[in-house]
Image (cartoon, rainbow, N blue to C red; front, side):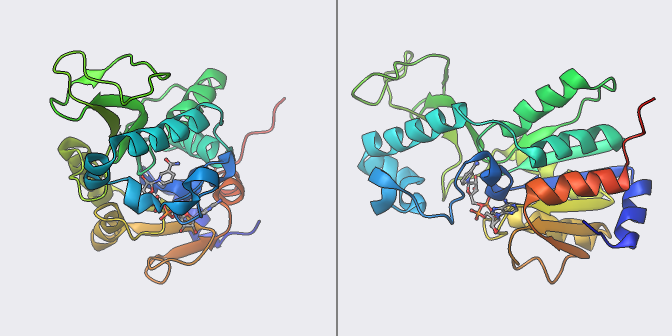
Length: 260
Ligand code: NAD
């Protein structure tokens, strides 16, 4: 895979990188993006009609079951070469920040895999803008729940206040966790290179991060299977699957030294 030489040159010298990922980065792990249609029982519902506080108020069981299905699915999948390439890039850049809209925890899984096989340990932030499917909290008092009965026919209740439990994710119409958003904005404003990977760039405020980076002079690189509203504004728009483009790009910019 050939990349523009000026992009490779920028990456070889870069010290501060921020990456924003979206559902597309997990597509090659077998997780559907929101733009893909749903299947089976769920085909009659749009995700945007299930991932809202109004949907939960109307039919908590329907929303709980949809998330339980997604949680089960996530447990069966593994990070793909895109997640692994980003975890590798994190070790090659001195100041690296990963911001994700995904709720699947696959970046953390990839980090654990790469950390286990790498001599170079480097801590870097993984900022979850939209929460994590694996966590559950009370819809009334906000208390996180450590355990709950998956086989329960009804939506499980909070051990503290008896309120209904809900997934600890950000629904459409809800505010993002303040600290996570502030950290993400700061990382976008201070990086030298900003990657936007596998995101359609239509869900705010995540979509504005690339522009915040660009306005502060960062080089913006998009990796996406299709053109998006950002493509024309990005310095480099690399069209293709993240699981193919990212490993090749990391290898082109930071070639693995030949083993003796
Ligand atoms: P999106 O569904 O709006 O867009 C996905 C983007 O990824 C599209 O632009 C598509 O062209 C691109 N894409 C698809 N496959 C790709 C691949 N293999 N390589 C590169 N690009 C690929 O997703 P979004 O922008 O993340 O925003 C929608 C919301 O969906 C977010 O809030 C997110 O929390 C949620 N979501 C998360 C997951 C997950 O955690 N895995 C899955 C579905 C939806």
